[in-house]
Each structure stands twice: as C-alpha cells, then as structure tokens.
Length: 291
Image (cartoon, rainbow, N blue to C red; front, side, top):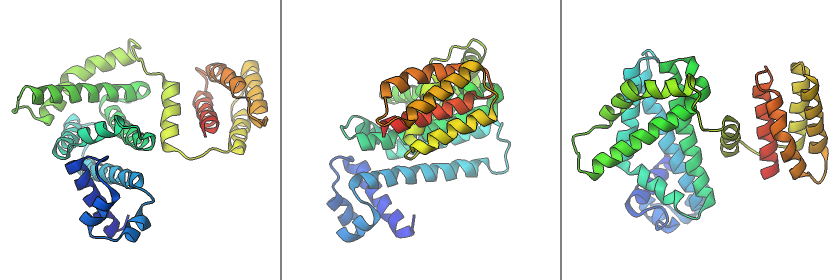
C-alpha cells in the first residue's frame, strides 16, 4: 500500500472511530483526506473496500508491533506473550476497536461482517500459534479453541472491570493472570480430557471460506487424484474417493449427494496419514459448492 493510500486509510479510520462506520460517507472521507472523488475510487471501489483496507492496516500494524516485541527473544517465554497480548488490548481500548467491530457485526452488511470475521480468524490464529510456542506441541490440535477461550475470558474481565469503574486494572495484569493461572487447567482439559467443543473439520472449512479464493472443478479433481497417488487407500477410502470424483464431474452438481458423501469420506481417513489431505479436499468441495 503506497504512502498516500495509507494516509487516506488513516483518515477513514479516524472518522469511523469518531462517527461510526455506517454514518460515515465516502464524501466525509474525501473531505477529511483532502482528495478528489476520482482519487478515492482509484484506491477503493466502494466504502466497504475502504473498511477492508482499514482492517488490513490495523492487522498489519499489530503484526509489526508484536514482531518487534519478539525479536531476539525466546518464543517460549511467557513474559513475551504477555507483553504482546497487553499491547494488543491497550491498542484496542485506545482506538475503540471492539465498538467498531460490534457495529459491523450488528449491521446487515454481509460483506463487512466477513471482513471482521476474517480479521478475527487471523488474530485468533496468531494467538493459537503463540500458545503452542509457550505450552508446547501437545496443544496444537486444540490451540485455536484455547485461543478463543483466552480471548473470551480476557474480554469479559476487562469489560466488567470497566463497567464497575475498576480503573486500576491493566490489560497486562489480566493477561498474566489468565496465562499463569487459568490456561494450564484449560489446556489440561482440552488436551488430556478431550473437552474440546469446536468441530475441527467445520473450523477448517470456515477458515478457508474466509481466507481463500475461488476453487475450480479441475483443482478438486486433481487433488483427489493426487491423494490416491500419495496415500495407500483402504477399500473404503478408495470407494469414497472415487464416488466423490464421479459426483464432482457431474453437471449440474448434485449437491445433496456430495453432502451425503463428505462426512463418511473424511471420517474414513481419521487416524491415517491422509486425514489432513482429506480435510483440505472437503474444504475445497465446500467452497466450490458455495461459490
């Protein structure tokens, strides 16, 4: 993003904080940024695209600040993670990001809701990876859910403290308390007692729908062919793969039949080397049907 466009994005962000996203018009942004309407449309095709650019800029700046805090330090150091999380919470409070996101999620604009969902998925994914750095690979399978639980606890503790005018509480204190005292119990439940409630396969599909591009029929067929070459199939796996391949080739696509095949297809690979690949193929097919 060039410097002039970044300036326009910053002006738009300031307006969204002051007035809210819905009440802010393109004309408001043009006047605040001191640009022409033509320049605005040279940068963005719509206000929604401008909102998307604002969220991307926020995410980029947060990424850079978090990375700076980690340079030359042990990624497994919990104090580094506490610093990173508290920095994010302080920025969110300073700029009123929570209120901004809530405004979008309570709107009827599906496109902007997707922008916020994508932003949150990236942020939860970052925290999930960092929790694995700190607590170890044993958490990998449940790391996303652990990150969701952490963020929920953090958000509601900070919200409650603010509501009762408890001004002495700091985001860093909240992060430290959760990470040092609560997360070990939560992780034990997720990993040892298998208490996870988020469906890993559906999460995989949702993340892909939010972050990836259009899928073509030939890409799915190629993925199915590749999987049969790379993994030694059982009879059931081979039959379900062939049945899916046949259905994907049909025009028009018989979605009800494909849907009926997907669950047993993925379940047939559970516990095998081909499970992750089967989930990826399932995700590609879901995206293909929803396009």
